[in-house]
Image (cartoon, rainbow, N blue to C red; front, side):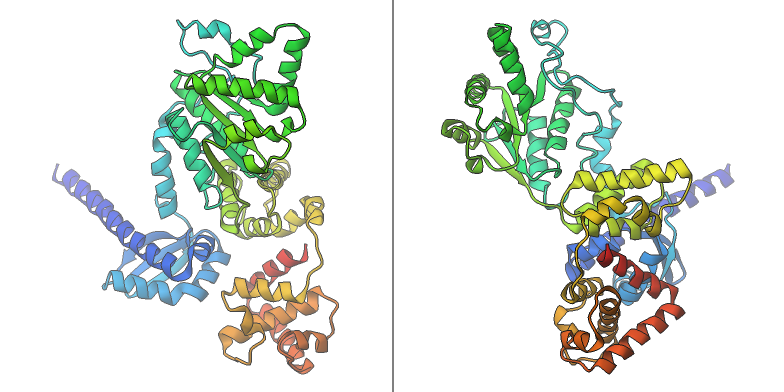
Length: 486
């Protein structure tokens, strides 16, 4: 019995130590974010997980050798100093490649905690977009199953990756899903470019509302609204069509810009809109532009659409694209190296759908042929997508990308400073300029602060030597080259 108690105490002590370390690491992460910025933190440091402490050394884990080497070179000393300041007994930090499943990263813990209530609910099969209020409600007989489009079960709040470009729209959508017809949120108007998540949020609102089973939801595109309206006119059932739409608790219309120039359909939507809002029902609408910019819609409709909550979704940032790819890769069960995710996030920047589609192709290729996902395979499998994004590389672009990669100032590319922290990225930029452009050594030298052509030749040779000696450095340069080349 005593042995059992001792074992229990040991486990309790280990768990207590983990909790204390997690608190310390959370504080250190906040310091790091303040020092290096949100973008740098999410790109390089967010995936660090905390390992054990042995004597005066703590082990930190990163998922890939590339990330480990990068963090060790750029932030190793700073991590050691921060840990020592937080816990004086810790004097050394060891970085290793591994991620114990029992120790998720702090960001992952926060995401799991926030998603826990929703995850606890049993998974549901594909649901129709129109659901009855309750078994005994007369509305069940009033709603036809073919009135609206089905909801996509994959599009939920749990699967929506939140970042600065979409966090306001996400918060508004959550509010509507939790409390429909809240003052100031009816209607909810979501707008943004193609493939940025408007439809995902609308489906997520519908799924969340249907989970409660107390409201009826109708989701359809503006195009389908028009076709249903025209069909009702032809079949002389417009009253039935109007009664069905105006009986729902939540009406969601996607891609409203499709109604531009269709005056009769706009008129019907306007009256449906008024009837629902006046009855205290919720309306959610999406479009590619804000209500005030939708020229071609009737003024009275644009005014009504703008009287509620208008939330825009901006173009994705690099860190958001990385987060989306990480979530998608994790859900697939296929190991996708971080350098491949970074490559895709750099190359496909305009459309989240295209970004996810590219990753889906890579995952399918890996599953079908049983081959690992590599940068080489990525270029082969996605050659058509990458070709569409192809552009001529300039020395200015190379300088900017290298400066961002090494976290140096762009002006250092032209300055007279010779410190290693400045000279090495500059030499890499010279090497890439020679590899990726048709410029001569003297022309490249002029782009780097009017340097002599022999200086450029020396820099190119030095980088080639370092790549032959240091595989990690070679991998770093190769990643940059691929990002710029295709």
